[in-house]
Image (cartoon, rainbow, N blue to C red; front, top):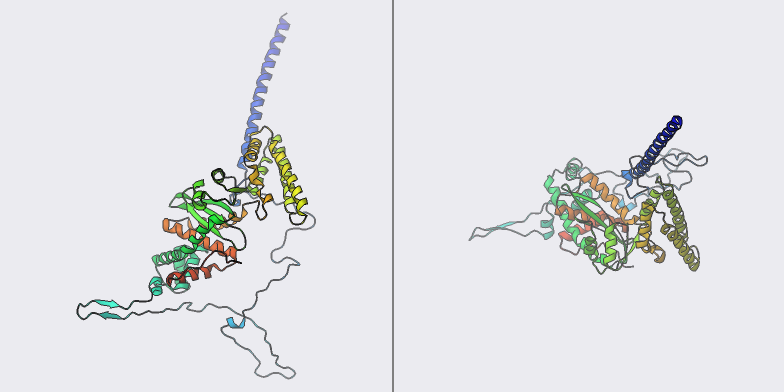
Length: 472
């Protein structure tokens, strides 16, 4: 009887120990799952989230080379067409030197052509100084002294003429040069010593000259049928502001920038108006969804952002969520294979294929497992799924928001170098010069020439040139 009792006690102790170990194991497994999810979140990079590539701490490894082809050598690749610079035409050649034999050796004759080497060089003094003298006159009765009025363009320009003013503005805006760097450049290269304040005054004159064309684009913005919008941070004396980019795509369209303290939908209402009824390409940020609810706008939500979010699901430790992410990625790839065949297959056949791919994507995304990350994705499509497929129904609409994001890269570089602005005047300057540079690049125009012509128009009280595309 004693032996049986001891065995029962031992069994009870073992069962209690097993139960305790099982409980500890369950807690440990739950903690491991939690930590794996946290690791997956911490390992987010530009391929699995909306983080910029510059935020990647470690670059992802390169895919293994396929076949015998190894790493490409630097420089021109085999079988690529050679690109050579076209020589200057005769009207652009300032001076010509001919080299000939004084005495032609026997058996040789001079041909009517030359082997030409063209050389470009800076002149020693790359500027000219013009002195405008206004005769003084004195009133014989009162003794008052007056000067003959100088031309308005001379008085408004001051020390720097239009072209030199445009150069300083181009250096400050396009080259990210600081005021001190511009001052040293003019002193060292041009032998033109000027003060820090003179550079600031020159930049502000250029800012005033660019104001009319900037405002013209602002008024034209609400009339556009389609645009991409994005925003990025902006620093001003330690405070966080937001730089908004409104990008109207196409070879002959424009890009408009606006700096605002807010990142909310009120900026969209202020810039586009509540009556705006066009299509906006954007990411899934809440301000655009609120703008959608309160206006007649239609969205094209960015698939590049969505795909990164789906790729993140495919990296999570939970097997069910990971499988959901892989299935969804597969259907998205099939959708875009169909989209890239647009124009290559008959329209009716393409429309049927696109509708089928759309249904397949929705079938997978809405049949989400009971996991929080997968359910969030399904909820996104239940509420705004139609806004992802605008590009299938409307030709000319891009499925991604890459246009404004490309324009914003310049702002990110400028923010790193210049450390932002210091006040209202600097903010307006940035808006105007960024708009000018981006639009000129988009339309294939010279930004320096446009700045120069705008400054001439401002100095001479003429109408400012336009950044709007010319009518066909």
